[in-house]
Image 1 (cartoon, rainbow, N blue to C red):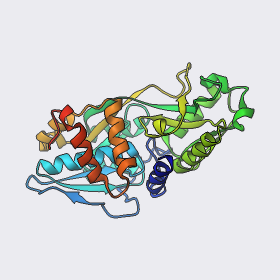
Image 2 (cartoon, one colour):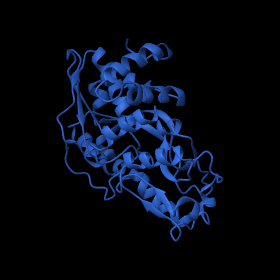
Image 3 (cartoon, helix red, strand yellow):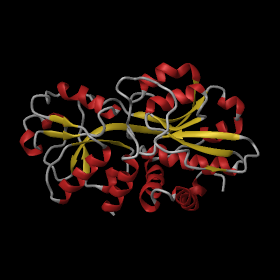
Image 4 (spheres, rainbow, N blue to C red):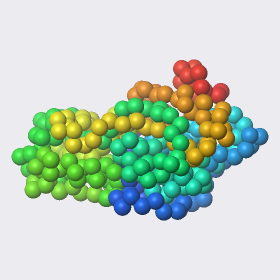
Length: 309
């Protein structure tokens, strides 16, 4: 199962520049850019018009909720276009310019706050579907340490490294802010490359029962796929928990009140979100997202009053 999960993420992660917690470090917006391919597909009768959902394929929260919305809006009579992008900056810019109608899983409170501050006058918040997203430093469950402050003096056990993700990710920037607060800069190097590479190293270390420290986040399927635990953060240096939001282009709710009402009702707890992401990313995988959503609705649709069956 772990191998299939790594393969699924690698297929997505290599194709895109940033990952789930990604914010471009320069905060630039830029123009709408594709992630190397045309819009993946569209769905729905189009009786009510067209809606474009913009998402980054390697951000598995946005990937899962994008296809959930594609299914639901198609059933409501909309022609849904799926626009894949390579970076958070162009996605926020595209949303603010009306090139994208919906951003299905934004982190605007902390991780992507710079983008939200830049474009808030031309973006609508359509609702928060998950309320406890957070950035973490994680180690294997068998590790002797339980708190970030215990990393100090333990560099030998972890090879003097914290294994990170993409250099431009918001998670990377937050980790760089955290390290001096705990006095880790002299002992540890933050190694950045890609989410897929980090997960490969995590897989290898945990299979060998070796110590490893990695940058992670919640919600994310890897927290249950691997034997890991979040380190306590007594200084709060990894940032406060935040909500995952649906964002819309300015005027979206007025133009599509039925969609805005439906989206505003979507609330997922840990178990519900976890089952959605696991179904899309792991149990079905790339290219079978619509089938994954069908199965998830079959299993969980009765729990929600907003689900269109």
